Image (cartoon, rainbow, N blue to C red; front, side, top):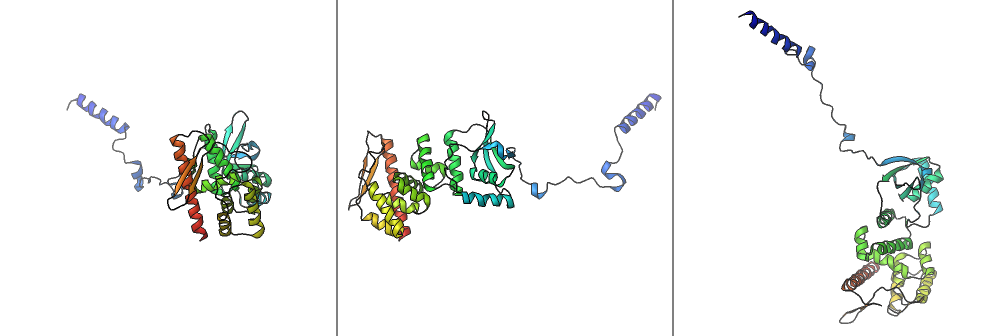
Length: 312
């Protein structure tokens, strides 16, 4: 082998050595095994941290003036405030940022915010809703939150149902599907709005059960409704006894006091050997409006059947 070949061999050896050829793997040096890949702890497996969660000063949060709840029980707020003091906040509230006001506006959780204020908490755990919220979507979120937590009084809930229906042009059936609640529940709630104010007050005060008030709403005129509500409260009539009293009354469908109602359809079901359904409008109705009225009548009958079965 010539000198040139010998130089080439040495050069290649030097290059190999500089690149680490022939060296033992780092983990194999001195008999040490290569470190194992770290496994994810069980408590973190499948966990995704939310970027919208934050601790926000209570003073930087304001209530939404258009939220459906109107009254708050002071004794209940005091109990919740004491729970927040001793156990802390168990569930975050939901807020949105109002750029013009420079504050966070409550989407859901006003009761907890009020209780936190009473408890003197400096901050609240919040989930921040990013982006604008349409009024109808906002009310739906608040309704779902309040319905699930049973925070709304019956008439407050009924008013919120009606507002949401008017804003979106929904029928009772569409509202029920949007909120994920049975349509008969919507029918019973909306019937409370047809009652005179003194009867609604009894429902809000808890002296008249909403289910019983729904039965009273089937009576023809407001004066008779009010008198029957007084009888139910004073005599302590059960719902089944109220149903019987309503059945002895004239069939529903006559005009109520306080002037004509808005342009909504009247659906009457005449129970004879051959049932007859009549849909009456104060204006020319489209096929879609007639269909919606029939669906509402069907839901009303379903609610009556369910109530009758429960009372049996």
